[in-house]
View 1 (spheres, one colour):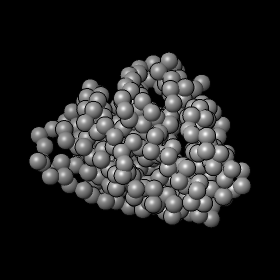
View 2 (cartoon, rainbow, N blue to C red):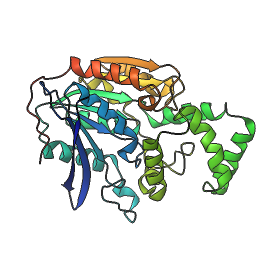
View 3 (cartoon, rainbow, N blue to C red):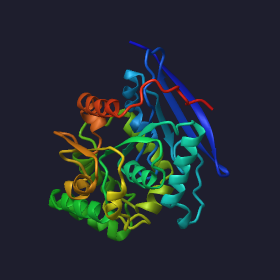
View 4 (cartoon, one colour):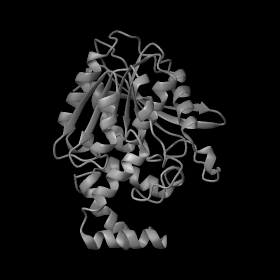
Length: 311
């Protein structure tokens, strides 16, 4: 098996820093267009997306990064609420693209919130974006909330009662609440248990500093009261001409009502639903996931590009 090369970078951004990782094959006859992986959360570090380095196997650089406020990038727990906005993360991504010299062509793979961010980025900076993969992504937070409420209503009654009681009391840090949430997590976020270590690592880091998640989402997946609660890209989708692959799991917390606008409104779109998977099919059904994503990326590559992923 061809070994992987890993380079780690600190990318200056405003007065802060963005941590990034570039993974490439040790030797390859072809250099395919790089893919930038945008993690979810917001504020859930990139670790759970590390298996996406499987996309290197056909000679493609894979770039992971931790968005500001989480992981190995700058942590800013004392920033005002209005600091944490979509514009900040779009400009951070733009800075990353410029830093690595990707303007000649690159793919974006956004998972959950990362796909929301990718959609906003391509609307503002479409040049050079060869394709966009939206993995488990809602087109609007009100639609996400509607779907989540439907899933919550199908949990056992006693689990629903625990969740509602602790959210009303503001005691979401309690053991009883966390145990109830884990039932939802095992059904609709990751159906592999014990959870894979990359996912556990991201969860641990999120618990250590939940600033971004609590500000933009709220105390939990069920109480979306943060700054993203009204976000929607639905009415702007007809402006996106980039080829898009929309992915979801059969038991995904991103329910069909939340992602169907991508299918009906995008100009150039493909779609796949992973049976038996939920919100992390790259961890639950990896063979099918990377086959489908790899085929999509290859169809939209610019083969032979120089690898412009150094500083």
